[in-house]
Length: 132
Image (cartoon, rainbow, N blue to C red; front, side, top):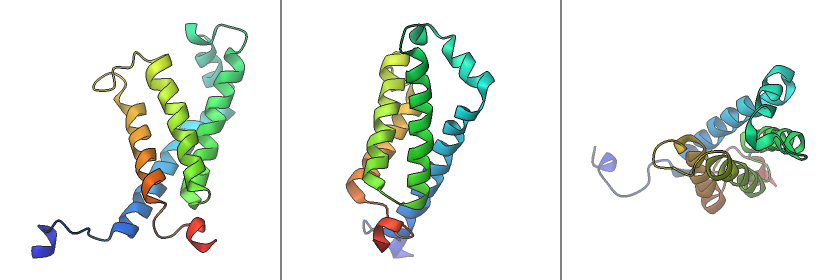
């Protein structure tokens, strides 16, 4: 029982791997909108995307979410996936949102923080990075 009240980590590599895989699945879910013309057209109606690069930015963002999610689930090129995730989510929180990360734009900013954890700590067990 003392191990639960200790400051020592409890299954750190396995815990990191589980959180990494779930985070990757969330990113795949969001990135999968890339294949929904209706959803992508909905995004293109936003004022922020009504410019010459709006369509490119929208599709690039969704593609980055999808690719980063797949890489995180596999634990392959984890740090590159973290940079992709943090970049897209920082753009969402501060450019598309209002940068109110303590309330309105919490969810994208939480993805940034999770990406920072995996960038620093690595992918944990069950990753192709560990095998390579």
